[in-house]
Picture 1 (tube, rainbow, N blue to C red):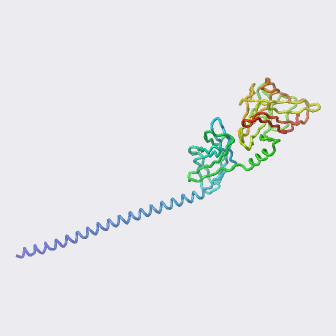
Picture 2 (cartoon, rainbow, N blue to C red; picture 1 turned 45 degrees about the horizontal axis):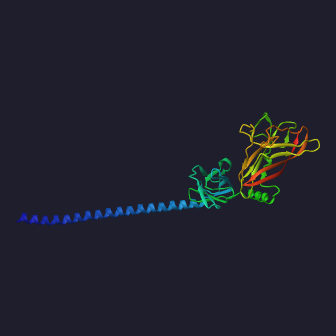
Picture 3 (spheres, rainbow, N blue to C red; picture 1 turned 45 degrees about the vertical axis):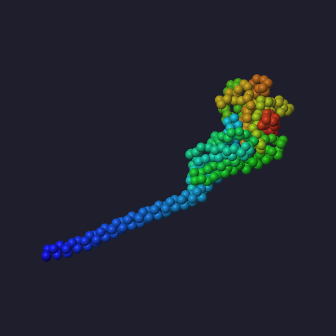
Length: 339
């Protein structure tokens, strides 16, 4: 009887202990789940806050980015169907900037063109990037012509756009050329005037460098180099033909002199026949005058300066076409001193 009674008592206690143990395990499971949920919530909240901070920082960087352009111009290569865009970019903001694309809109034919990724165009704060001359960027647009009107803009890696601003100083030159019809659309670069002497009867010395200045040896075979810029406000291409010349009028004791336009190879060798020289809108190019005869009519022969120590007036007499129309222009040129 006693053994049976103790077994019953123990059996009842064991059931109570099982309930307590089960409750403890349940509480532990609930605590662990709640802890994991709380930790997950904290981590998600931290990730959200980090993302918000990064987005805010990116937006602040984007707003602080400030790239400006100047001296923009458009040179059209009709043969290749390209617009060569020139510009000077400056990073005027506190953030480094990367240029990734250039878009060009031809407003005349309502057509777009754009470049691929321009991965090398990076500007530090305050840095200036010159994209003129050989550094210009070519953009293909089918059907483009020099007379078209263009708008263009760069796009940065942060999504900002940099509209191209044209050179106001050049625009003023165009207005002057437009109003001064007696001067015409070809502008002379006076500071770049030069002359060449000869290594042989048909090869120039130090070409294309030559000798800058307006003092020229007397009684010597020379050729002249003149830089001209096309400032036609209608953006037409100007073509110069073989009838164009450098003219020195005669006067008492000084014979009249003619130096007709020629083509010269890269090493300074003068080509016997002349092929037309073309200047696109805003393009600057050196023209060489060397022959004593029009190469469309006669053969090349060198021309000498007068054998007298004196000052003379000279003119550029230009002939050709502008677009598809005839063109001619006489530029009151420079005075030379023969020594």
